[in-house]
Amino acid sequence: MSFARCLLALFLLLPPSFRLALPGYHWQFPRDDYAHAHFANEWWYFTGNLHTAQGRAFGFELTFFRISPFPGATLRQDLYFTHFAITDVAAKRFLLDTRARRGDWSQAGLTPLAASGFTLFNENWRARFGASGPVRLRAAWGVQPRMALDLRLVPGPRMLNGVHGWSQKGSASGQASYYYSFPHLRASGTINGHAVSGLAWMDHEFASNQLSPHQQGWDWMGLHLPAGDLMLFNLRRVGGGRDPHSAGTWLPRGGRPLALGAGDFTLTPLHAWHGYPVAWRIAAPKLGLQATVTARLDDQLVHDPVIGVTYWEGAVAVHGRQQGRAIAGEGYLELTGYGRRFTLLQSSIR
Image 1 (cartoon, one colour):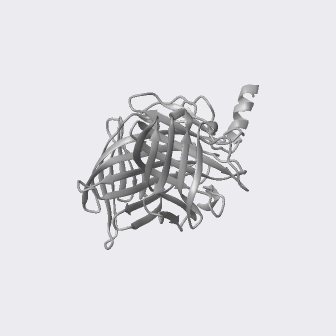
Image 2 (cartoon, rainbow, N blue to C red; image 1 turned 120 degrees about the horizontal axis):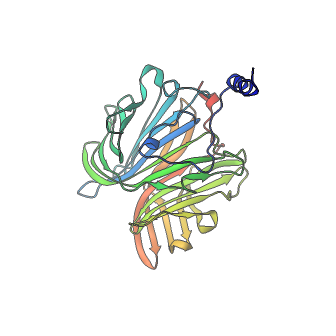
Image 3 (cartoon, one colour; image 1 turned 90 degrees about the horizontal axis):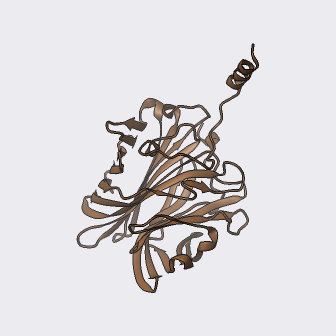
């Protein structure tokens, strides 16, 4: 047997491993809107702020997670869990349901469609994608109180985060994700029977080893401001302190994304609810921005008892000044790793 054949035989005997998020990824859209089976975990994260014609405000989250149980698993073998939440600001009510389904019974997964589209689904909770991005969200659950969402989406530009979509979270090889956003999705339809319109945000990330063992969790926010859309995340270290890989992206209206490093902004907690800081002060001198971010409702806690994940995710209002002008905006805030270190472990779902 030749040396080359010996190497090939040895390679075939090695157990498969997950791919790591390394610099230099070549993005291809709409292909990369779809799933990436060789990575351990992936999510398509929809959040939004909606309003009736009379001004009644709602927030929503519809998040699809894909978790691979082992390297080499197919998409049909993966676990899909989905979180669906509605914040009714006027009623001061937060509604939540979660689902965990495996793809091998066709209860959840991805269904390719014609013209480069696909449907991401967990039973009757669905996100439909066309060639230009997400175009429809539908979800319903319960009788009293009922949760129901049916939105048509008009995608804005895709925003690559980090270095051309490579978002570094730690110093070791592979402690990163491939990460892009649709930060400006125009949404219209119904929520809980009310006709609404507004703006939504979608994050899509895939990775195999994002956080380092020294990181406790993160504080993330996606904000719609008059002059553009802003994403920021703070990485927190075990035992306290801010990780230097904290980062963000600013997308000005009609402009190009600007990557922000940890030195370009500060996030200062102002008020906590059960240990979760639900009000923040933002300072981003490069953007001329000073603002406060405040939860529209303190209790927007997401708990998934099946996989043991707990985090805070909710609608927020923004007030402050940018480039000397008074501004108001809205968005979503996510807080993880409060109480215990946040992880998504494959071993927990086998």
